Each structure stands twice: as C-alpha cells, then as structure tokens.
Image 1 (cartoon, rainbow, N blue to C red):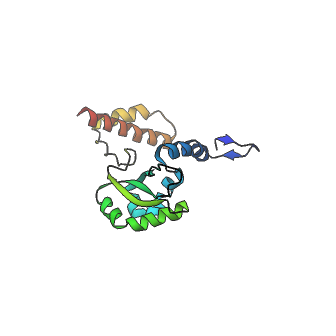
Image 2: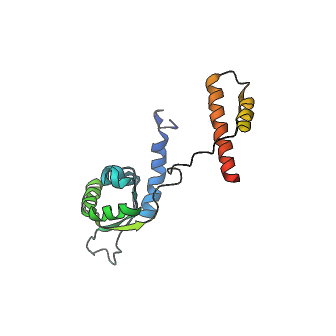
Image 3: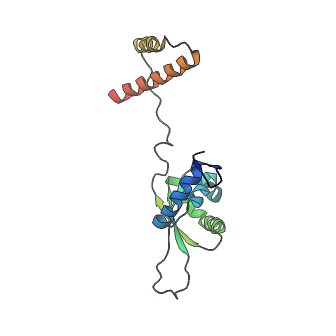
Length: 169
C-alpha cells in the first residue's frame, strides 16, 4: 500500500500507476490499460501468451458531421500466433467490442514481432563451479550462523560466479 486518499485509506501502487499511465496510453496509443490487462481474458490464454494489443488506430474524420467509422486494433504477434489470430480475428473483434462496450473495432492489423520481454524469457542456467570455486564460496559464507541464510547466499554466489564464467568465456 503506497498512497493515501482523502479518508486515510491505503491505496495499492497498481491503482496509482494506472491513474498515471492510463491517460498517457490513451493519448499515445488510443488504448486503455484495462484492455492490455484483460488481454488474456479477451484473446484467450493460448493467443495471449504470444500476442499483445499495441494500439488502436482511429480513422481520420475530415468534418464533425462525418459518420462514425470503427477503428483498427493493431496487435503484435509472434510466429504461429499470427496465423491463429488471423483465423480467430472475428471472434477477437467481437470480444474486444464487448469489452469496450460498443462497436469500436472494425478490423485487426497484425504486426509480427517479439512479444515477450527479456524479463519473461527464461535465462540460461549458470555454468557449474569447479571444486576450487566451490571451496572459496563455502569459505566466504562459512561464518554465517543462520543455516537458511548461509544456504541462500551460497546459491546466490554460485549463480553469480557461474554467470561471470559464462560472460568471460
């Protein structure tokens, strides 16, 4: 709980971040945080893991009297998810429109590009340590009395030393 409102009730950080980011996303990408956060429910877990909504492109209106035209939802996809999304485009459009509460989206444009961030990708396992490195690490953490803390620090040290070996080779 990070902030406080008028009556002193704590407010989650996510609510504060949403209040800050939602207007920026609406202005820059024409999309709301609610759509991005609910993407798994809208697209389904199979498509949501390999796709994400990028922005909503609204058609330009030359005059205020011009009739309403639905927008284009631009979705970033990886590999085969683009093919699956293309086949399920009608269903996704219907679900997005149901989420938004009106027929805002008329078509989908698919961009093929990586969707998962570097943080979400699995990292390679660190290289195993030699006996000399293991003994050095044991000596470094050997004076710590708490067994749990000592074991955690030993694992952390092994990970750091293994990654340094990977970068050095």
